[in-house]
Length: 278
Image (cartoon, rainbow, N blue to C red; front, top):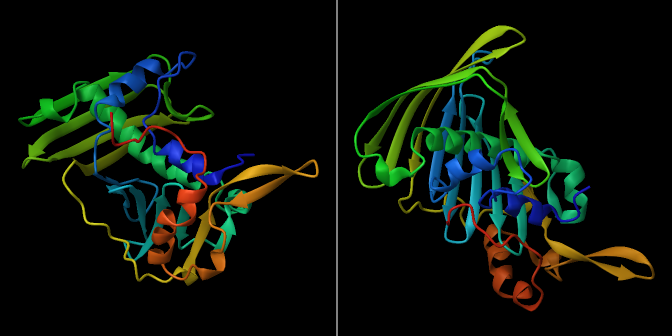
């Protein structure tokens, strides 16, 4: 059981460290130079579904945002991560403001699963060019085949996903303007002996992106998980949230403003590295 939901989610958004005992050290190094993005959009055309799945991963100033578009883009599952404050989920099965210690049972591995979609693309881009986006200046045709050991991608020290072999990636990457890398892939793999072909399209960018979540958004239909720490109290672990008066939180703006009030007094444990910085 993860004690700090917020810390866990920030770790997911951190640069994936290349742990010495990890079987995925080489894969981690391939992704390193592609972590410095502000916006990553990924659309997968899964043959098992009637409509594509689209994901957006955004960093605006110190916040991290995940959008997952559902039902032909009519619904959007949103995740907002505010460092040292907490994590807010829109369109979760529950709503309300809760200590992070209560949220894990509700959200489970949702963010980890969502974020695996971003890491897979960063890995593919690293396989195309380990040097990073600055080396993509013209349109490149790609064809990569892997038929050895399964490809293991580490999300954090205790969580990973695996791409079974054989798999093949073909398609193109191309520079679009000063900041965007456009990709158009065809990912082929086998599942229970059956060949699966998944077209993947999207954009990697490090241009400035406006924050899509507004201060005036009401928290009434968000699940807000407030970060905190555990302290000993009469031989029991007691969760102490970083925000002392959560009843005053009514809007996204209130949540953001709490960062400069309560949080400056008592800072929660967080990961030291940011996925978008080297």
